[in-house]
Amino acid sequence: MPRHSHDDLLRALGRSELAPVYYLHGTEDILKEELARAIVDGALQPHERDFNFDQRSAQQLDAEELHSLVNTLPMLAERRVVVIRDIEAWKKKASQRAVLTKYLENPSLDTVLVLVESAPSEEKRRDWEPDAEIVARSYAVNLEPLEPARVARWVAFHAKRLGVTFAEGAAEHLAASAGYELGALRSELEKFASLAGDAPVTREQVGDLVGVRHGETLEDWVDAVLGDELPKALALTTPVLEQSGCRG
Image (cartoon, rainbow, N blue to C red; front, side, top):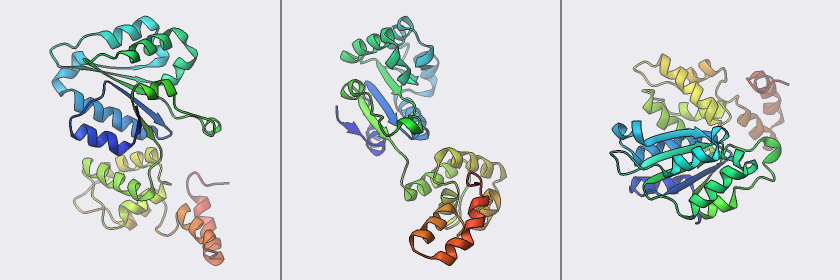
């Protein structure tokens, strides 16, 4: 099967189109979590999940348990969903891999299997490739870090779900302050949710909470350096180094 994007999968789910097997891989684990949840939401009603939803780690599954999970019939529902994380562990476990390979050749129409591979470590990313065998037999989605503009929209979307609204420029500043890292942003949004009032959060309030004022992000420093603005870059050096994760 061809590889698909994050948006491809969301559009397919919006059309209620489900694949028998999904393979979520790449370096952005937060997006994998969100898509796995979206697949479950699209496949099962809340009242169907007690008997028809299983979520396991590949590291804790033996071959017999895996066979049982993927071949169990749904109960009082059209289908069941099985989410298996950390599937990179099966590269060294021949018996589990054999069960998976056999299943992928003829997956059940009553089961939606979601295979989630953890992000490779920094030292392995250059040579890392998705599992070609699974890609060929699944709806494979490569999940990499979002572009900055999309991160700001991601922040606004998740903030709304938490009851937080941002004034103009505030979501963008929060995204830049966290280095566009979704994990850090999720933590910051939870803080804002606990402090949320009726008024939209301003850019200045974001700066006060995260400790990074507007115009003093790492991105601003990089832009100054690349733009050959030496005085500005020098002025930003100290505040940028004082920010979390940037201390030398």
